[in-house]
Image (cartoon, rainbow over the protein chains, first blue to last red):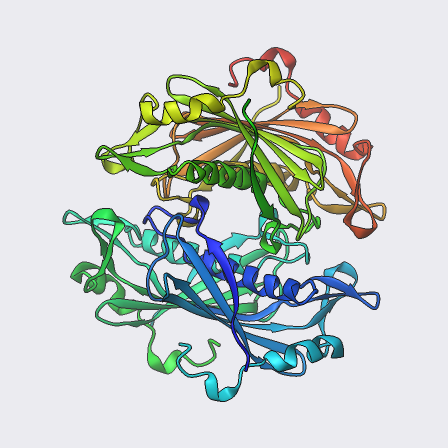
Amino acid sequence: MPTDFVYPRRVQFAETDMAGIAHFANFMKWMEEAEHAFFRSHGMSVHEEREGELLGWPRLSAQCDYKKPARFEDELEVHMVIEKMSEKTLTHVFTFVRDTEPIATGRFVTICCKRGPGDTLKSVPIPDEIRALFTPLVMDCGSQQGKD
Amino acid sequence: MPTDFVYPRRVQFAETDMAGIAHFANFMKWMEEAEHAFFRSHGMSVHEEREGELLGWPRLSAQCDYKKPARFEDELEVHMVIEKMSEKTLTHVFTFVRDTEPIATGRFVTICCKRGPGDTLKSVPIPDEIRALFTPLVMDCGSQQGKD
Amino acid sequence: MPTDFVYPRRVQFAETDMAGIAHFANFMKWMEEAEHAFFRSHGMSVHEEREGELLGWPRLSAQCDYKKPARFEDELEVHMVIEKMSEKTLTHVFTFVRDTEPIATGRFVTICCKRGPGDTLKSVPIPDEIRALFTPLVMDCGSQQGKD
Amino acid sequence: MPTDFVYPRRVQFAETDMAGIAHFANFMKWMEEAEHAFFRSHGMSVHEEREGELLGWPRLSAQCDYKKPARFEDELEVHMVIEKMSEKTLTHVFTFVRDTEPIATGRFVTICCKRGPGDTLKSVPIPDEIRALFTPLVMDCGSQQGKD
């Protein structure tokens, strides 16, 4: 049964805005930080060479729903699961938790790409090694409810 | 017939990442900049006092779909329309255009709030004056296709 | 003998730029994060109410010298000491260390201010309680050499 | 007689912080934006290929002195001059002006580098073509006073 990957993150001063709350775009960065920490927790980097090719995971889409504001020095937990893995893409689902209370949820669809000359990007199938690592972690469809 | 509000925006160096492209979270900031420029174009500010109360428009949701990467010094056009206006919320739809080619689309749902003591936020109906200004600009349902 | 306060910080992907290194402006944010973590380590916040007044520490100056680039996923240590405390100001000196090697140094001069109506800022003497806490930590003048 | 290069910049909402003012680190980004606009105004890019080599201008140092806060929607002018050009480095001096009032000043020392494999950076003499372009713009030593 896949469990959440949890990335703890404190809200920094530079991340607040004049409304006195964390600026909404930072949630996008925090989701990405959690995604990358998840890769590291599996001994990988989200941006690395494999068999002479530079592999990356640009976003096809990014989305966040905000329920409560986050504030300076809040200690958040970013919970992440892999909702889906297709031939070339991963869908990551995130829940932001503060003191056991979910305050926001988000979702990324990322696509496996190799980086060519001139920083061009070309989508490629997810390498077998990564697929094997992630397969047991992909969320059971039956357990998706309640996430949003 | 409502027309797009267009906000021109050049991609800055600090907005690129090591993949050689604009970091995805910046599209969120550019949408917000367009939204705020739209408010200014109507003689308003997105964050202002009205009848002694500080009004703001926090996001309920933010979302972006990425088709092509943006790169350093690209001159983008952020096209924005108001897709929907409810009692308290606005839905803004965005298309990022580079040289007539759409490279990304996004959507915000924002909610009219007044800011109370301690930077608390309480949703309120959109003031009549703002409603009157925006009503003729709300997108006709029939013209929504093709935006995404 | 005052010792460094050490704040560990990993370089995030969004903090890199198209030159493949951490964008220089992030060092400013990391210094500020270290400063704020230092305040927290003394049971304080850099932005808090004291006797009914909201106190903050805006920067009078900020400066950084860069020796080596930082890169994605680098684990940096931000070392901080208080170099000087005047009636209203603090001077913080920072050294960025990667694997025992200093890669950058910086300095902030911050001024104690109370925040008034309309987000105005007025400089005030450093409160006695804070002065008492920080006094034993102020760097000995004789040990300043070698920092830059 | 060299004159200032002027880059207009409006303060964006995401650039404010919970103190109700523009976060100090943004001044660093605005200086860089002005520097890059200056390069563009001379038909160049700060990050470009020349004779098959990728040239860039990383910072050796960055510094800013803050006199007055900048606020949301302020229309600033970033004035820039080249204070000095050495074999490999440029020193840029900046003044931030709001309604004719200087509110901050800053300085960059940048070093001409070529980017090698693996995103390595190696300092190189400023190319003759760039040197020729900038030479008439370098600030007369006698006119440096009064800038700060």
